[in-house]
Image (cartoon, rainbow, N blue to C red):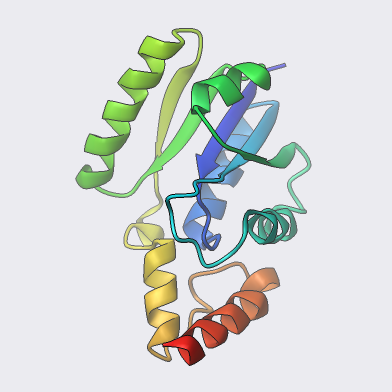
Amino acid sequence: MKTAICPGSFDPVTLGHLDIIKRASKLFDKVIVAVLLNMDKKTWFTIGERIDLLKKATADIPNVEIAGFEGLLVDFARQKEACAIVKGLRAVSDFEYEFQMALTNMKLDSGVETMFLTTSSENMYLSSSIVKQVGLLGGDIKPFVPECVHDEIVSRIKQRSRLR
C-alpha cells in the first residue's frame, strides 16, 4: 500500500488545497493530510478546527485521512510509513522554497520522496491568506473555499473583523 503525506497549515482549507488532495488521492492508495501545528505561526483556526474543516471538505474521498502533527515532516512520514510527500505548487516562488525543503527532507530521510503537483490554472493565485484578506475586506469567498465549510470560515472572518 502506497501512502503519501499532503502537509500544510490549511488556515483555512481552500479549493486549491482540495484540488491537490483529490489529485494525490488518485495517485496513492492512501493520502494523509497532515495539518501542521506550529506554535510560532499565528493561525486563525485551531488545529482541531482545521482538522474538522478538512474532514468535512474531504468526506467524499474514501482514501484520505486527516491528522495533526508537529515536528519534522519526515519523522511524521516515517511514523505513518509514507513513501512520499505531495506538495502543491502555484508559482516559481513556491518552487524555490519547496525545492529547498524537499532537498532537506531527502537529506534527513532518503526513503521519503517529495512530489510536486502544479495547481490547476483556476487556483494559481489562491491561498489561505488571500481568502482571509478578501473576507476581511467584505468580499465573497464562495469561489475560493469548499461549499461545505464556507459558513464556518465566514463566521471566523466576521469574528476577526470585529477584533480589528
